[in-house]
Image (cartoon, rainbow, N blue to C red; front, side, top):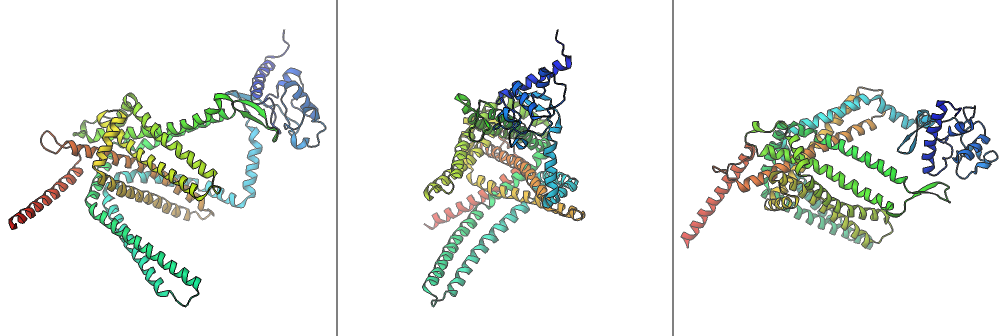
Length: 582
């Protein structure tokens, strides 16, 4: 019969699990930290003491368990006589540490193991006056920071609803800024050229005179280029002025969509949480891959490294591709969900007959019918993004060592792949909308969306340029209001000596929140535009072919039709007069 108590047996079993886990990681403990299999020595040797008090005990522990508590470069039989044992070995006495096996890894149960690290960190913060002041300012103003973050969230939600009322003002601001900026910049360049021409002194030395003439020629080239750019820009704005009205109408309808579908505002939250869960899982698997393979001791550093052989060495690349593909898949699911809900809203004539929760209905349709479409679209983006990331990595590694031609070619390839990725992402989003409308596969939907966008190229350009700038102004407005409120709040708290970090935290959070919510607004506008283009292509407002569009879009169509009829009438009269003269 075994004379050991049940507690001793339980300890031995626990420590054998820990010892097995430790051997899988290399067979020896790290220098300066006690092994998690430490109590195994007491179970086997029936030690009456509670800890290892001498270096001879460390040697016996190493002999009995094969787990060295000192550094790798110190042999176990020299623990007692080694000259650097005070720095290479743990501080005596070494207390036993219980362990909790998690995924075949030893996790300390007693959190006091991290007490020294916490103590060192607190000491560093206390000794560094700047860091201490900054962290103290953040901690003492944490209520204000949380309140300002909540303010940014509320402002983003409010802006998504009221932007339809201020879009006209924002468009006029954009027009005024572009016109004044282009004309003013061109005028300044010409003034600088004339001033430079008058200030050139022919009596200057040859070298200085040559430099002055080069500057004069450069200013002339800049002025001519700015003039050409300004003329082209003003002509484009003149010819696209009517199409800007479509952008304003779409913004107006998008605001109505959020009032009828308030759950759309929560899509960034669900997407962010899903991405965070996936990234945590991805990092966890990456850490397991980092400790997979065969443990081999590095002769130069004396540390144990894990080397992966065979097919296992390609798992890291497979894992990296999975990170990009699944991240794009999650974002594509958000786009498909939003597109399905907005399509349901647009093509429902009686809004009271809409489903109770169009968002939930769109998610169910996605999971049942359209997962393959979303996977294929995400895979196409992955195929373009991987070469771009590889070229970016090569460019960063060769920085300063490649010649000018190679550097230019790398940058050009990276830029082209980036542009291709953005174009494909925009086409994918419209393909998801076409899928939500027609329930067709990805390739058919992408082809239909491409032809519809090509037929409305000028409208697409107006929406993307004007709409993006309006949304950018909305982000600036939210960040500015949050920062201004932060300055006012911190101004009444004089004890906060460092304002920089709290304000930076608040402004960064406000921008991220505004970007997430207004990106959903941008998706809604793009979906509405494709629905509008399909509606005007297959319907004309006659009996039996009535429009599905909102009243604001209907007014835009009617105004465009009147302008077209007026232009056709004038053109017909002019042709009739010419024929009479002849």
